[in-house]
Length: 90
Image (cartoon, rainbow, N blue to C red; front, side):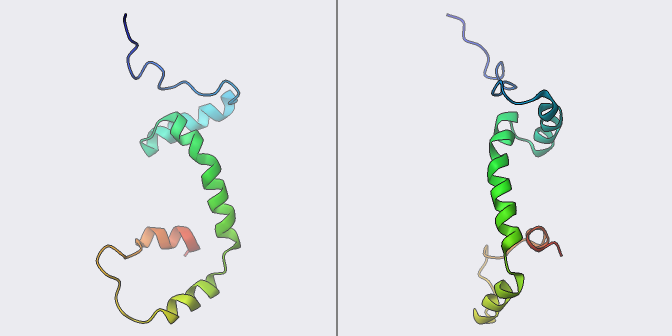
C-alpha cells in the first residue's frame, strides 16, 4: 500500500470554512509558523482571551501586584515586556 505524504492533507480544513476566511488565514498561519488547522482552531481561544482581557481591571491587578512585595522575580518568572504591552496596551 502507498501511504500519502504527511503534507498531502496539510492544507485541508473543514469544508464549511468560507474561502474569504481561508484567503486571510493561510498567510497569517504561515507568518506564525503554524498549520492552517492549528491557526483556525486557536481562533476561538484567542477570542475568549481577548474578551476576558477587555473585562480586566488594570488598577485592581496592579494593586494586587503591589501587595506581593518588592522581592525580585525568580529567574524564569519575569513577564516579557511584549506581553505586558499586549495585555494592557501600554
